[in-house]
Length: 149
Image 1 (cartoon, helix red, strand yellow):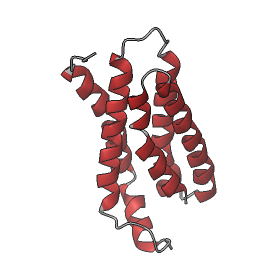
Image 2 (tube, rainbow, N blue to C red):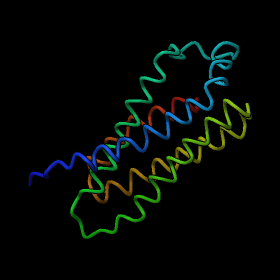
Image 3 (cartoon, one colour):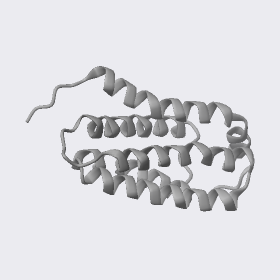
Image 4 (spheres, rainbow, N blue to C red):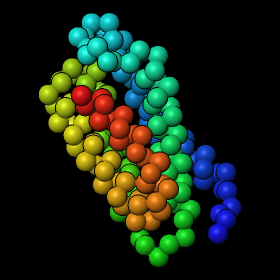
């Protein structure tokens, strides 16, 4: 069955996580810059330019995933899926403030573990509605796992 592309819904769903990430990045940019210059980081830390590129791709994938859930015809209730999706997006947004602005690394670690659990829960809930929507979130889970390290 071929689904008709709804450009308005697709753009809305992509714009939401991109806006969340953009606002978070803008408001914490000073802390990010300070951390990049002064923090001791593992040898495998990617170059600084990669982070905004990676996050732009990941937020776009999140939006595509949400679009697939929104537009999938199903008898399954989507409410729980979207509650988890927006909850993990909120945790994603707040993490940057805890880590880069408050410099509370222990709390940020606990927060990112909760975020990680919420991403897994979102993936599992999305999988019950549309497999592809769940699989699209796996790079995000991998990136957050890497960030937690």
